[in-house]
Image 1 (tube, rainbow, N blue to C red):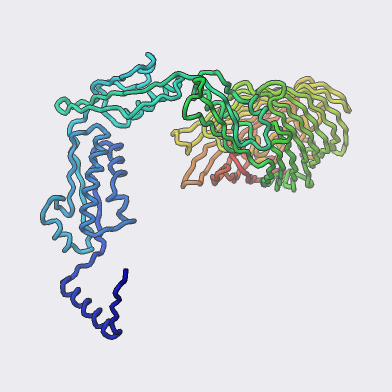
Image 2 (cartoon, one colour):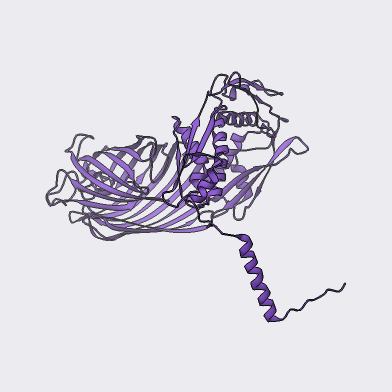
Length: 617
């Protein structure tokens, strides 16, 4: 095929282009600008707050008002589309006879004069788009039926009754409950299509028919794992709460998934059931696992006027031998404050072996070296402990161990060496919702440690301590919290000077009574240095108010007493009060507290400041 090429001289070409442009301009006639038309939107309230919110949320007139301005013609079309959206929202609330009336600058959308008015409309003032609603009668549910073969207990899960408002959300929620109930009964392939709805306009009723397909009942099939790298599959399989041959249960699968996630080795745990049953009529399950990095390093810094700067760093191995064993190495430095006479350190190592001898039982071994110089005493010590920690339930746990301590303590210019052997036991309860920022629940712990001290003098004694805290969410929004804590402790079988100084009770500081230096409350030597005691009682009430998004304020009152030789609650009480600020981050709140003593001690400070991560308790 040959193509003809027509060549036009350059000057003639430009002349032709100019003539064509002039002709186009003449044919087009006068033009109008296509500038966006500013407008305002008013939705007349219906008297139902939830419905008003749904109507506003469905409106593109509102959502696109600033981000996508339009001209007059497009504004009319946007208003018409919104009318259809408004009807959908009204129907979903049971108003099937509702009407929507929309006007632009007082003109209905079907007004023949609306286009010319929009063409002539100025940019200022903006056009007013007004929408009103005639709700009409609210439809109620008529017959609610389930067709098809389903277990007899399934109907009770609908929680949908004749006579209640015909709300789409309620009907769809019932659809979800029906599906969940079928699968919880062991029907993994169950399907529940969108229910059939039949309107009766003359009676203002809506009949609803559910048509579930239960499918076959099935058991759990073969269980496989993907994503394992450093973890031993044998440990994961032993740990798994799910077993082949058990009746299919979404709840059991989720419990098994959450339990695997709780051991601290995996960052993601997904339970993925197969799309179809296997030839044996069972449903295979695959657990897709993503392991966390094997090693981690973290560092924290805290400050208080009594203890000064406390810097600590830790190194963690999350999976030492492939069975979720943990090795944690820590080093902390106390760099000095009002209650510390010179810098000190705490260096430690901890080994944890989960599922030791039985499930939910952890073997713990700790070694710590301590060197600290406090107002109460100077201490150099080596501490060892081995314990079995057992989880009894989601909230309860117990621990029993054996501890040893070799230490040299200088107090009142006298140095004594001690060798301690103890049997630490504890019972703990924790139902709180967050480790660093609890808003509800209870924490409680009972510690009992029979101890034999080989020193000068030797002594056998029992130290018991009960502590607890609880949290009240006043408005159930996590923003206004009342927090209360208490501590009671007693050492029996020995007087105060028969106890090694580090085994005595002290009060004062962020953990007991803020506003006083660490360990300074209670009996004192003639030089006003702390003696310590055999009994302690402390309590705190704190109000926490979150404001301005990530910020918060607190107010608190602490009280406490230490008795040299006596029972709890029998000493002289001292109180501290203060205020604080919080900045909430993804890892926990950053805390700044300012506290003053209400019963200032001789030689004591007029205030204390505490900075750290996490709430005070």
